[in-house]
Image (tube, rainbow, N blue to C red; front, side, top):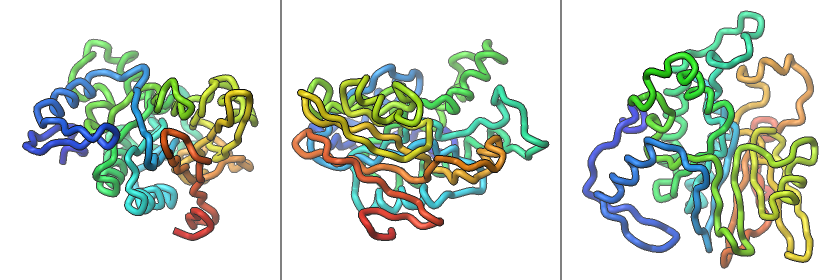
Length: 292
């Protein structure tokens, strides 16, 4: 009910922080929740010394469609018990509030139906990883929601329901997540790449100077780069959607260098180990050489 209607019920429980092992009172948790539903953070900071982070991107959740990648994401969340789950932008599509016209009278879902689908899918992830810290970065498609209202109904600014924050109160949200900053394991997760093109993952980690995980391009690839400071990784998260889904009718049936899947990031002693992909191939999910 909280997820569907964008409300938060009072709770007498405490919240466990997996990084510093501290217990947060329910009153403080309520205070933090109120802060999170009123603003996006420019830089979200956190620490993950030992454990798993599950990161998926570009879900473009669509009413009536549950993709194999999303199902696999939930299954691996149950199996791996990640300490952090990140949805790296574009969790909704915003088809009717796009600046682009419809394609050949394509039937598009309403914003309401898209938001409900997004809430349902996110609730499934929450149930699959009940102890994980939930984080999402802002994608360009997500921004369509607020941008449309800014342009067409500015008088409603700061009213309840005028931000996606209000519909996903359990998810911390901002432009970029910085994990283990100023250490050898410094990892940035952000929807946009730093440098584009076919070598975006490589170029982004080179230019960022840290491990860099991005979405937006749907390619699902990981490259490594080494210099005097050591080896670091650039990751393109691919897409949690089906590349042939109705969200992407604008591709006009052309060949796509896109791949459905997501990545598992494992940290040991604050160091990022080689990122591991979960790949969707012919409708089946594969991770570490096994179907899941």
